[in-house]
Length: 495
Image (cartoon, rainbow, N blue to C red; front, side, top):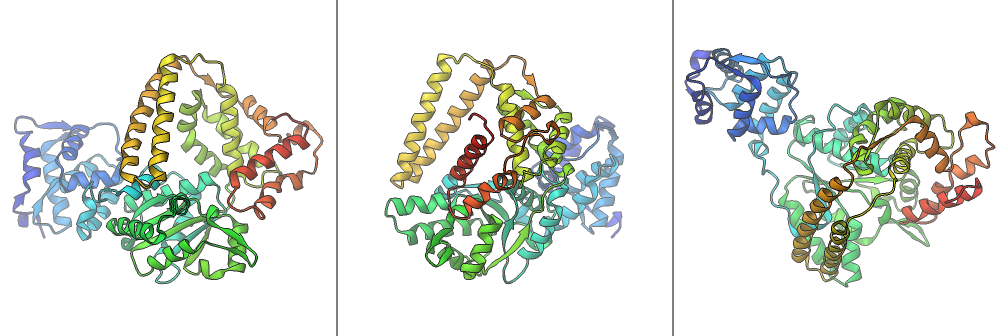
């Protein structure tokens, strides 16, 4: 099809171009803003490509944009010029690296039109609202090479007819969460096989959901039916059960999973619902040995120990969160130092978890200067605790609708707290230094070999937490706390 075969402009495209009747040029940023506001296919493309990788605003000739838009329409053999073609034209004329990706996304949107709507995810029901969270962030794409191979392996597994559920092994809580967000992001931005386009990744607290049912003698069958109904309303779902390790139980015959998990897996068979579980390697191996039928529908994907560059990339990604939480400035040079330092420790069996623990401890030490809390702040804290108690009470009675109202109140209270905290801590934030990382190493009970300090049963101490967890199921936080206390005591350190 040539340009002569294109016989019309869409109403939205006409509306955009009519704004330029009296001008010859426009900035690329202004043009993109108009496309975004048009609520057409161009808006859908921008939504899935967000954030756009565009250069600084460039002045464009209106005529050049129109000519290029016609060229883009002819490439797709479309008989019209729409906002999507205007977007492609702007990306092409500004030499944006998103141009080719936008063309690929347009093909997929043409095949799956519902994906182009911002409201393509239906309203979340009461159960999903309280126990689940839709993951749709786009910040992880192309930023963490550490996840590229396991993500590719996941695509292959998810497309299988059998064993199309995923068991993620070798990760920490933080790295598992990042993996789930990375997967959600790649699907949301169409960086995935075509058959996976349109899937929604949802993080869900299955343990708490069924714990509530059993503690209040509710019908697990009814609860399960309600959950399945809400999941099916989302159509195509990858359910990230982040607390899977807590579901595993120890019986006289070995490790197994509760009957409600088995019932859930049976219920989603032959549906568009897939499951992603992060599991500790030891627990996964024991399950495969003691009750392999519980994992029959799963394909295992393993996260390897990260390299120095991987640690730095992940820390850099989380830098803002840690900085804002602790009110501490974190230079990139310190993250590089930490990434290198943590790999020097032979007693770090999980370098990613240790890296995050080190950063958190160091930031806490630097940011723990004395602060005077205002009466307003104290009142807001009391109010938040009261709302939280009401939410717990509503959950205990199964009143999810009232719990949702409480959750909204808690959100407003959190915003008010944040505003007051900003006022309280508006003073200049302190800056994290390499020396603070060294102090954190000591605080955590890890001796620096370069200081020639005596090592006491380092190998046994470093594996203490893992060995305890192999015998104590579902109490990871408590085991970690006990392990740290034993390590610190053995090394002669205070709590």
